[in-house]
Length: 361
Image 1 (cartoon, rainbow, N blue to C red):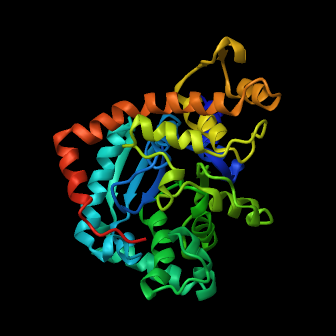
Image 2 (tube, one colour):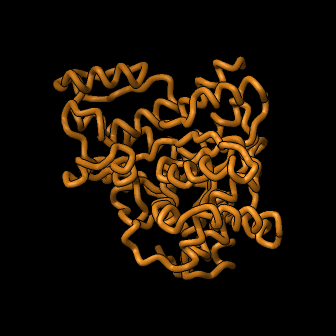
């Protein structure tokens, strides 16, 4: 692919890119570049945004020329008191996550899994962490608490104060040209851009992917939020299982959750069902069929998300048409993954063992 084709593919992943000019310059300079994402292992329940959507985004990045470094943030999860603060259990969960992404079709030929614990004995890593801590105010670090799912008002532990310094250091330790994380991680990525040149490093390019929203009605009291903060507020959450589709949900569960989902007639923005079509279904299918009785207008064949948007906005497609169709396609996509996770002997054993672990937020 030429530079413009690669740029277009990355822009399909990046809801926000800082900056477009820097990204284009990088692609002109390098056929292969380093992108990274990190994840905290934290339980068996991996929802569709963490599983299938993550695989879609990583595959686009690798197709565009990325050597993708997936940072298994086991020590970070330990610092954030995940899995009851048991590092051995955190690492066991990390291996399970890798199996889930394999089942989701992530192109692992261009993905490298690197464990944070492997860096913890290296002076080079801690020197970067310390220099970031030295050049950042405490208030600046506390404002990054959002990356851990914490707010500035939370009573953070000392380890959680250190967490943003570690995450910013990860970027430079991994020699990442591009940070390809969710919008909820942007504050620490901006911190890295601020401190990088001061410490003799570079300004990493930020490619923040969209956070798939939960299936519930958006809270009205967050309407006045900054747009990026509102996106984070609306994102899918494990802690609200009825508002998320999990990679092991049954067909019955998927359709029940879809039928309950928030989907106001004609509204496209902040509509979780429309998000499923945009970010997942139309990524996997060139066209979709909406099945419905003749008395409700008969079957429809729709060839793009834009066409679906026009038909739903104009009232030609009813919310129940959307919900039923989304449920059918999502179940079809999840079915082989669910089969693998629930019935492959190795993965099944891992999953059952993890379900005995204490899970903490």
